Image (tube, rainbow, N blue to C red; front, top):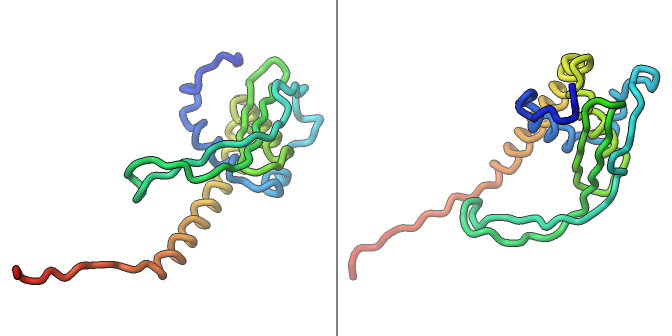
Amino acid sequence: MTSDTPTTEYPARPAWLAVLARATLAQLEAKVPAAGELPSLKQVRAPEIGMVMLRGRVGGTGNPFNLGEASVVRCAVRLGDGPLGVAYALGRDKRRAELAALFDALLQDPRHHDELQSVLIAPLALAQAQARARQQQDVAGSKVEFFTLVRGEA
């Protein structure tokens, strides 16, 4: 596989990038393969910290507005002469972004793809979905419904 392989070869790539971006450092470090099992790693873009503007929408669907700024780390690594792995992660943890980029590159390699999908991405995606569902249940308990009573014509 060349580095010019389009994302369409792996249509699930945006999904696994999102899962990797939300994963904690401990979750990623627990699955790092031994160094002897990896081809040489080249840092194309060393982890660097920057800022992004967070935007929201009024009522979730209305006019956009600037919500504030957040720190973000980006990184890009290449496995030997193979695939290029990239990562963006909220926060300032350079190691987390580096590992996410490593796993992105490994997931694009057919030798590692299926195994990592089953032992890393699927369990992380399930845990993240369960955490989201728990949070939605907690928030739903405090939801307040407003309604207006209409009076007759005066």
